[in-house]
Image (cartoon, rainbow, N blue to C red):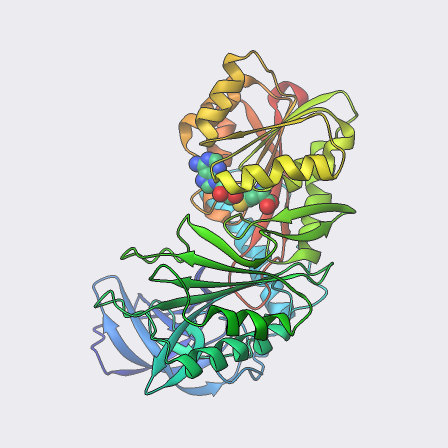
Length: 454
Ligand code: SAH
């Protein structure tokens, strides 16, 4: 059956995609529609066709799904963030659970028990970090978020996922920008000063870092901005990130502190962690504690183990387990994060930890050459997962257990299949909902050397 652009077709929504679009089939062709929910019967207006699939928008909801709820955010249908805001949280959890289960079955071709997803206590206000693209037009400043797969800014200064304080801080930037006629960055021309406003809050201590990402060397009227930001006593650090490149990457490597501390400090599982602007830090603190607790159970340390924390960021997972480890090594590619990890070890009086800056493979290779044989390896790669050569090297290093923390179930599944072929059996997976209302899904998996399985 042919579908043409601008057709209106009746569609039953069968499932959601990993990017948060709803999917149904029409004459055997998959039709993707954002804003619909599994179980909806809709009229979709087709905006794009290709041989294998079509893209539509919701024109009319004929029969709403029992899982459909009214979105409580005025921009959720435009902004690329909360794809699941018109779905019940119960349905979101069911979907995330099935996504992890399906990945393990269909991509890894493994039969691994998947525990019930660990739900979030709060589905709003859980994020501790925001990066707002900004625009100034006719002297009016707006901050917001990009529309899905676009660089069109959807104005939004009161995102439900962010701490309420961020709105006040954005208003300070607005006051400063409008007072000084600050220009916003134009991607096409490479001109204009302000690119993003990057805010981070250490939830436990309340400390806030405010960073302006600029296409320039310094801020106009910096003093005014700092004085206004300081009125919020939680603001402990004001920075400028200098990003003059023609790139979609938000932060460059160059960040200067213009007032206050270079880092903010948060607490996780009773330990303190300093965080630099360029370092990775989990965005959902309370779910992160639950994730690390499961990771700790899967590591099953007794006090005699050598642990290698690959992709360690500021050292959080390894350090949260350090009391039960004999020795701890961490490897991380971002230099500021490695500096943070070293300081975090000191802050928490951990003297059995050593950190290396570099790629996970070269770092692990270095450890192997030094004759270090880990009992447990923790893997927490970015979405693209691990390279095959790293997994092969890990198998050569022969740890008893691997704890694989993943933010993408498809690459987790791919890597679990590779590990299976290398004699490492996935034993159990626990999904953790770190990103409520968005399609992102975290999972942690225990993998055992085959001879440890029985
Ligand atoms: N385990 C940490 C960080 C996880 S995020 C935590 O829970 O907070 C993944 C980390 O891997 C980031 O800090 C990122 O900077 C780092 N990274 C990305 N590519 C890398 C590579 N090739 N080698 C080593 N680290 C890498």
